[in-house]
Image 1: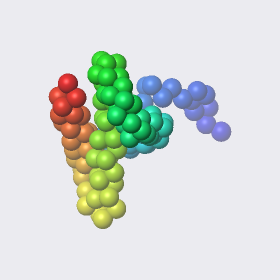
Image 2 (image 1 turned 45 degrees about the horizontal axis):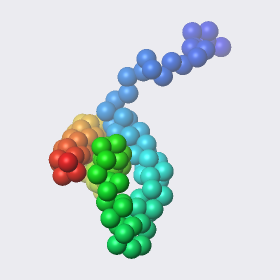
Image 3 (image 1 turned 135 degrees about the horizontal axis):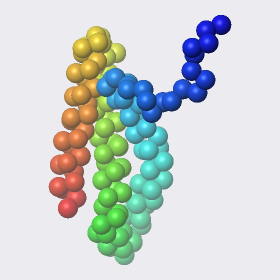
Length: 124
């Protein structure tokens, strides 16, 4: 048996390639959207309940912290969408090479970052 094997693997010292980071972020954003879905459904229900409930929700959504939470949910949604489109292209064998994977990962991150910035401007 090889005695040079690490006993405890320190994941913080490993530098992941960009496609791996993009894939991990895609999964994390999917889980975040899953967790945020009840909040979004509650907001939808309140907005459709009555005019008074809609006005109360609208007043709640004017808060700074609430806008940050909404921006985080939108960022997760936008990244998940961009990474999902990237995966669809890869399923069609477009950009499934090593260099194509890097470009696609950077493209998904860049598109999501620009879209999130635009959504932040729109929210405020």
